[in-house]
Amino acid sequence: DRMVTHLVTLLEGLAASPASPVAGLPLLTAAEQATLARWNATEMDFPRESLLHELVEAQVERSPEAVALVDGHERISYLEMDRRANRLAHALRRRGVGPDVLVGVCVRRSAPMVIALLAILKAGGAYVPLDPEYPAARLAWMIEDAGMPLILSLGAFAPDVPFAEGAVLRLDLEAEALAREDEGRLLP
Image (cartoon, rainbow, N blue to C red; front, side, top):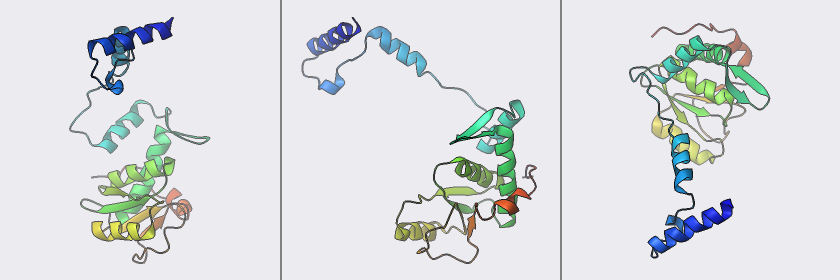
């Protein structure tokens, strides 16, 4: 029955506009299009004067135990995500991350990547995504072109990429040291 309805909709569209490409013909009925439009009406106001990390911190206050990140079998609450980001933000601030400082993030999509991005914002810096799959020459050019003084990575960072001593912070190797950092929020 639904297949017939969709076929009729398609044929009516073809009759109304015979020169239209197939991709432009309607596949959904008017009722289905209205339902789809309602489902996609997800716009929402948010405080425009707040920064992204401040919005996350407000969510931490509202629902600290709610799940913020799922990475494989690991489920991380907003509170734990905030604490981890704060620890890393303190370490970044000591390394000179602040306004106008670009930090490369060479981490596959994962919970540590989200936490790293949040930490950079909390420290006042800006992040530059570096795809670990890029060739070393491309990564080297991006790092030099942007003038990144620091790169965050998980695992070995492209060994063929020339960088200054201490310019790569390996989140996996520094996990114990980062766990001892202050988990309180940074002051602006």
